[in-house]
Image (cartoon, rainbow, N blue to C red; front, side):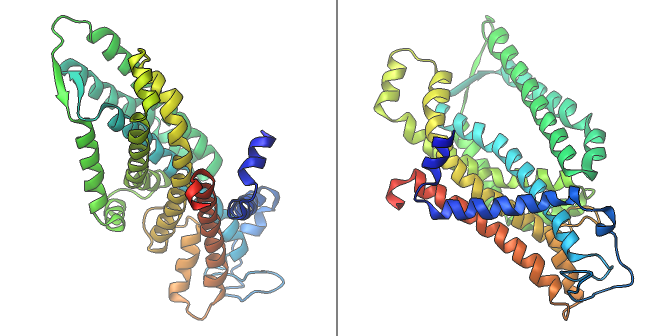
Length: 352
């Protein structure tokens, strides 16, 4: 493990600086567990107070300490971004692999398709709909929220795998199995193009205006609108890998498609995927900050970096409301860009 990290960071200043800044910011968000509750309470006797000994970074229009807001806001912003990236990856990674592997030559029976959609609905129902109250109850604590949503994702995938096994192992051998040609690559690529063609922020603002504001809503919306980039990267790298000679030889020797994907294709996809995930993570933070700055998405009163910046809209003379949250947001985005650039140089020899 130490050798892997040493090789990864050796002669890679961008990655080292980015990882160092990001680690410092993440540790800053964990400081909240060490601070007293009074640190996060509003001081109604010090409204819009400039930086002082009592409030090192000043206070907001409600007497909220800006330093406390940055610490708690970082935790929310990082949680939303992390869950959004996980959600987008769960959509983009398998869809990109499927599109590259099967192209427009996929075949499935009508009964298989029907059972797939049935299990898709069941997976959503049991993993997310029935557990919506548990997820809502955990929204007050970021780490509980992450664990609850990750468990829902795990349950969703397990139910889909059961459905796949049922459709592939039980329905396929039936005598009345009628294969249907599926242009999988065209369908998925067209769907990605349609989502990309719409103005992203307008879609998010429209959906958040219709639905009830919640952290989970923002995660789903950002994830559903950012998976297209992951899909394109995975599909492109997988297509190039599948055309290599050793893959053709493996197919000729009778190696299963599943083994080829897991053993050979994924090893080529993962490096470029990590690079894109760093960019996606920064994009998710920007989207979340933009939403809360505009007062959409998260419930009223939720403190994030965007909501701290939003307080400056009606208080132009309070420079500290813009400076300190803005600097933290800038450093967070800078660290992610440096990490992405460093990984890109590491995995792409032409950029060294």
